[in-house]
Amino acid sequence: MTDPAYPEIWRRRTARQSLLIWAGWFFLVALTAWCWQVMTRDTIWAFVSDAPIQAADIGSRMWPPRLSYMNQLWGPLWDTLNMATLGTILGVILAVPVAFLAARNTTPSALVLRPVALFIIVASRSINSLIWALLLVAIMGPGLLAGVIAIGLRSIGFIGKLLYEAIEEVDTAPVEAITATGASHAQLLDYAIVPQVLPAFWGITVFRWDINIRESAILGLVGAGGLGLKLQSSLNVLAWPQVTMILIVILATVIMSEWVSARVRRAII
Image 1 (cartoon, rainbow, N blue to C red):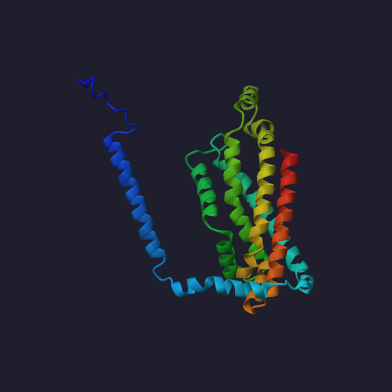
Image 2: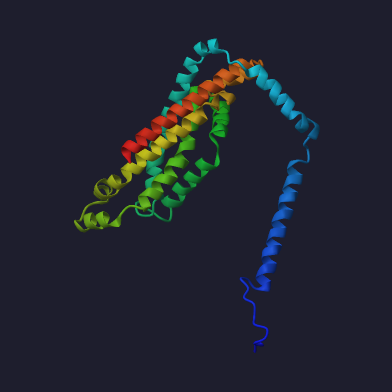
């Protein structure tokens, strides 16, 4: 029984819980220190200490940008936009059926087709578009086609995941009402599910196109064409004013695509 002269002090956690929390923090700090040691094991710290001087030197060489080089960037810029657009269209064409197969409320087979569709989505999202482009360039040779397919394969996972989640979150009332009329599965999709998912579909597509413009701008580093190819060639010959001009063009393109996608999403949603 508690002594009235010495009332029991309230504690948020028991002594065991506090000990476990401190042990967890100690393990986290120790793990962080070990990871830092592994990551910096081969680091040459003399180069790191000299990095600000080297960065300032390269920055001085990059300015001012070579404005006359812009005449050689219009073609690669057009290729980059086409790569992003065609890759997005390819990704949408492949992702839509995968999304309907992955959604619990629309898949014909939850035991076979749904796991296959989910595997395709995960596999697409786990491999970066740069890696896809590297593999496709090795298989198909350099060119825009490899970049378009790489963008499309990468887009399947992004569009498919967001779209199948949107399909699973549709309002069930229209679905139940149309099902009660004896409608077929195709009619159920056409009249109850697709109209609810359509705004999300367009928003996801435009958002992915905006992302693909960023990614297609660097796929030329592995031979897929576009602005990245010009960037790689300028870096190889240390033409820093040209590199600055290319970076300005990429930045302006990304800003414009962000503005366009924001306006389209606002108009749709």
